Image (cartoon, rainbow, N blue to C red):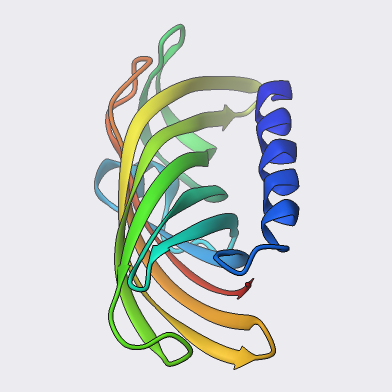
Length: 199
């Protein structure tokens, strides 16, 4: 976690420095999360717990490069069978349990925009990097967890629109794929964001 905290501090410092540049912008998003595939089986349905931060540098009128970091939480509980496979822990239980997935994407990205600067601009993009994934099962007094780093991709689509002064609104949708690693299979989920960015 110290490494993650150091990365987030570095990102915030770079973001504040970017504020002084008109060809940079940075912003925050509130994210909802919808797990898919096996992640949905383990981590439950829709989650309202997520947030992210990112910055982008304008390299052409319709192209940016940048970074994106986030924290997305999925959880479920129930009286059912769960098979948990981790790098150092395996668990097969039937009974009431609490299950959690915490996902921390750390990505670089590129985006392409349509429309004119200062107008409503739809965009598409691709985030590439790593996910730090924590999966956890609590069954009575037994706790089994698995923490691992995963290579991942997050294709993205969204809209950026003017709010006034140098502020822009953001609406985003991303499909997150973290490749299998550390004994766990692929982690997949959608996140939908609403946020604000400053130039």
